[in-house]
Amino acid sequence: MEHPRRVAVGSDTRHPVADGLAERLEAAGYAVIRCGAVGGADTPWPDAAEQVARLVAQRAAQAGIVCCWTGTGVSIAANKVPGIRAALCADPETARDARRWNDANVLALSLAASTPERAAEIAHAFLETGDVDPAEAANIARVDAMERRYGR
Image 1 (cartoon, rainbow, N blue to C red):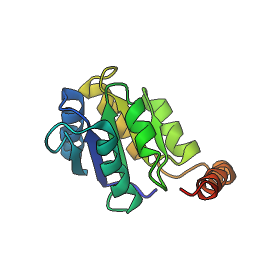
Image 2 (tube, rainbow, N blue to C red; image 1 turned 60 degrees about the vertical axis):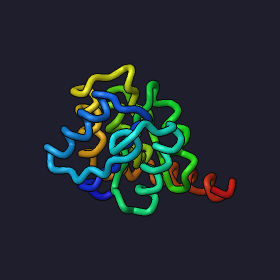
Image 3 (tube, rainbow, N blue to C red; image 1 turned 45 degrees about the horizontal axis):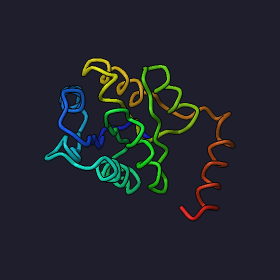
Image 4 (cartoon, rainbow, N blue to C red; image 1 turned 135 degrees about the vertical axis):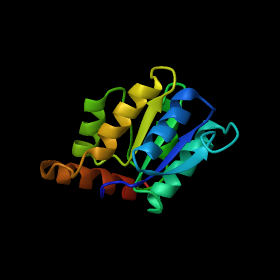
């Protein structure tokens, strides 16, 4: 993933974590594409996750961030979109490792288990991590092959 400057951010419900994250990313110079409740009304979590994932899969955004109460639902939903590798992360180190070792392109966050400050810290770790570890290229290719094998 190239260094992301366009980031799609979505949530199923209006919440200080999601709203604060979008604002902090914009203040840091990212072009934020607001999806779901981050850009409007409350949205079912599968729909908010799909909006973000579709933008990333179509390369309209270089990365995505999806939020719901636990982060699990949006992670599952985003991963249904071909080409998406969403990772639920609760700390910056896991977010960096998801990028580096798994080529994750969508970050999932829990609204219940985070604060706006912590969410921004995790998101910045995810977005600022550069290239994938070359030692993981074969494993990432295996995941891509699985996706093709199962018709996704």
